[in-house]
Length: 284
Image: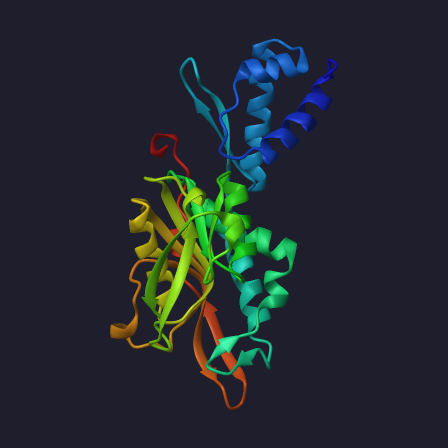
């Protein structure tokens, strides 16, 4: 890249950081990229950090040592997080979303790139201080959400399926009990899609009793992987406590009341806002 004026460096540097979240970038890389002194790069990064924090984009963390540098940590502030949750509540409360069995039609939301990116950034903000190696979900509706979260965490996605696909090579399969229907079902995951010992965040679009998520947790044990957290876009509260198969999780919204006959619902905020914490360098 040719030598840029400071204004050009700031624009390009900001864009580069936004495209490489959770990646340690050395000052040497930026110095070579812009043909500038490291002292000038350090001053530029101070400006970028101030704007990121001021505007709620996240923060830049300084990583000391020979292999150190700076790392962009996406973050959602309390105000923006509340706006994301409120927006989902208003969109879910539209009459007619209720489907048989108390489920919701959500494909229009899951198919909205801007909305799904906001939710992904919100989950990633909560997880910013944790080490995550992969995001796991089950096909198919959880896939857009999983990729949105993974993009901001800069980690791969592992997709669990209910059928075997020859193009994915050898598979690990388990049986699990659906929490809502109490039926025994099968889920599979390609052996190559998750490294043994990985720290995994599970995400799904909807959770009723939690049988599918419980199955994914059991599948992690087959890979000697560690569960770091669980996130759901919408949870149903129309489940007895003893029937809930998952204890610790975060949700964006929860269905407080569902009337299948009248096709009306009441939606409230989930617990994700309680999980937001400031990003501190000592946590990383």
